[in-house]
Figure 1 (cartoon, protein in one colour):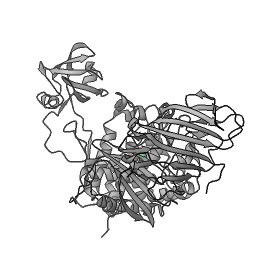
Figure 2 (cartoon, helix red, strand yellow):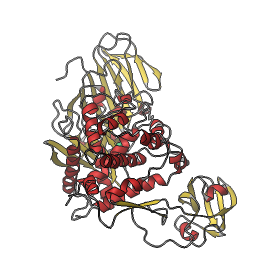
Figure 3 (cartoon, helix red, strand yellow):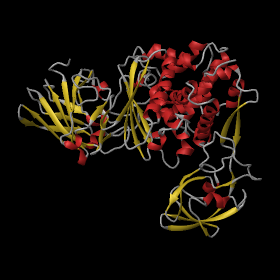
Figure 4 (cartoon, helix red, strand yellow):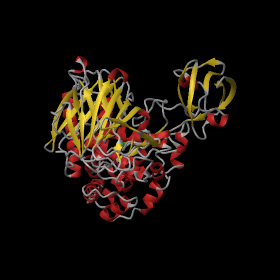
Length: 606
Ligand code: ZN
């Protein structure tokens, strides 16, 4: 039970039609020098300054029936005048950000992350607090329920009422969904798990529950146990077109397309559903890796400003490696399907020349200004610590399995990190991962880390995969939509496929250049991101027929493009180049997977 000196929060969707939550924060025994409080600048798990204070519309403070002066100190910090009695701060939050990182409210549902709605009362961060999640007034909202893993005090399960948190850090780590969502439940390791699905859909929720139960059980078996949680919640919002996930200590918030969900009567796993299961698997793995095994830089989080670590490749990359791996290990997808996913992931990395300019260690450090703020030069300048991090995780797994005669694998490393850091709450030092792996498995990995983690070299993946019975084939992309992972559908024309070396999008009256690739034909010709191509060789082009038109020309030929840069028409001769073999396909060799390969993917060994 809370005590009367606890900070209390009341949150009510006071004006759903205006996207306004009203929050009251009651502070008994405020700081006698004048209470200071602030809003977070960022939300854990998403490494970008978001300045949630910007959504606070109005704010007032009261004590013993009198209004109290508030002075703003910086963009997200305030101080109240000193008061002897209990202080109440009342404010309105504008909530119209339909993402897993913000807060959203309309007449159909409400969703919020605590980081976006709850002020942090300085000096009281480590104390327990009470939260009243209140029902909006009116008949329209009579059927609304609540889905959250905030510990309940006197609120019923799925009910409005009184919840609690042991600290501010916990308060903002249990997002709340309210509305008329559907529920499915299952159990993993004796702990109740729920899916709360919001949005219009025709999904087979029971099947989703059965499939997720297998994925979750797979992760639990890897770590040997679930962290100490009472329940786990998948909060899913299905929309027409959306994608996102954010991990929390006992839940995850997911945004997906309704077409990603399994339909009644379907038994196959479609590519879209496979992608959604991978996303759920990713966020669930984070329950251990980043929510509990954390970089030392995040223990505790400093939500006032950017917090740098060179280890995001480890927290996001290893998680990205295990997300899909769990699908094959749990039997949901086959080995070929898994290798297709790996091929796509490798393709994503190999298509960006930025991998030669930025290491995953630097990419982690600069996540705040580069990975989270990608611009038209991203492919030439940065590398994803997710995708290349996952490649490094795979390489480490394969090297450890091979180098220790299968005595160890990356699974053992994860379990050791869980024991040493996750269960103790000690942060992982910046050099900790490399050191721990080397100590555990007895391999000297300094060169590996120098070249591929701190350096920008490509890994010899073929060499790593071959003992597992898997070979790599590189081919030319068949179109801009070709994600890789699958064999070519037709032979490549003699002389190769002609390309401009750009990424494009549809634009009124032509084709918009979104990215100009380093050392490509378009760059050499002076074409820039933002240009709109309206004609090639005197004929009008649009996004659909640009690629078809390029097939009429051979690499080395010159074509004249007419492009608009802003409102200026330019005529630009471009010498076409041959597409590079940047598309990866992984194949199981003629002899099938070796025993090493079967053990890796969790398949039975004959
Ligand atoms: Zn992640």
